[in-house]
Image (cartoon, rainbow, N blue to C red; front, side, top):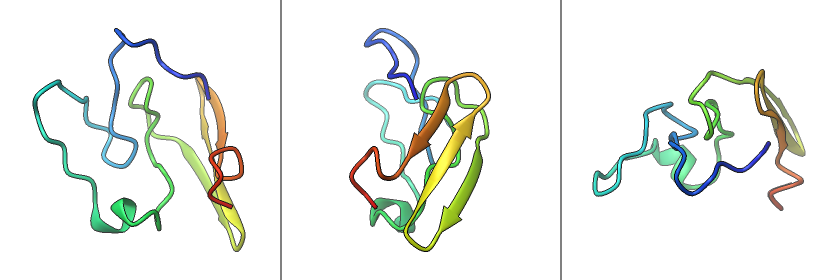
Length: 75
């Protein structure tokens, strides 16, 4: 997945809500513990296709490509 520019809008990968400076956005508890894969693209907020396996996960945004837990060091 391509990282968003610093001035671009960002979205919560677990809720899909747009992140606003100065506003606290609470993620689900399982996501905070690292037990849940992202469900929404951080760059555009679109719902992603997610595949979970025993050793990790991958998530695909139709616009920004694939993110893999191995790429993030979580596998």
